Image 1 (tube, rainbow, N blue to C red):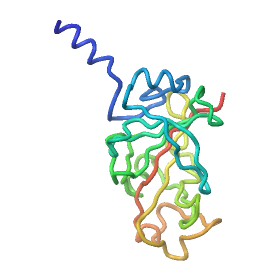
Image 2 (image 1 turned 90 degrees about the vertical axis):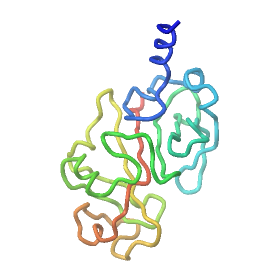
Image 3 (image 1 turned 60 degrees about the vertical axis):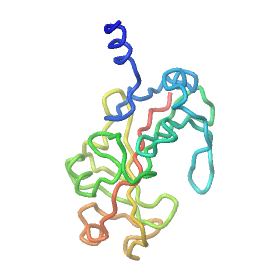
Image 4 (image 1 turned 180 degrees about the vertical axis):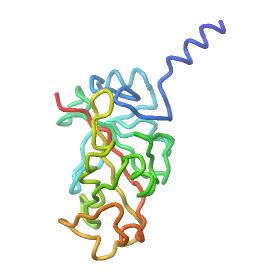
Length: 193
């Protein structure tokens, strides 16, 4: 009986820890396969998209904000996973991606990347995203063939020099360091098949 319980515990899906290209979901997962693994901890919901749009996706751990993961599918079809997203719904997360997590500083992301990177201007739909990891570790495919996106944000308005479409700022820029945004979103994206 104890052996069966130990085997069952080993096959339980993860509920926190490092996210990889293979865990907690893979590019070959479907809504059905994820729901089979996660049961009531996997719920279909409308998820936020760019420019006010929404799309249907699967939310893992919808009632535990520090464990919540949004799983997106290609073209709203639930047959092919396109990636997953962590958001700052709890200002912290029990998950990490490539050594970073929600709430990480500019310096922590720079350390994980191994060098400075470029952040887009704040205050618009695509604001605060890392646009270029400058050939650092976070700009390369992770083992298993997925890539990482990172977005920074902060309550309050960014200074004018750091705001707007077309603005690009290095992570070691003194004005950006003074503003001190933190990671508010991390994406794990699977290569389109």
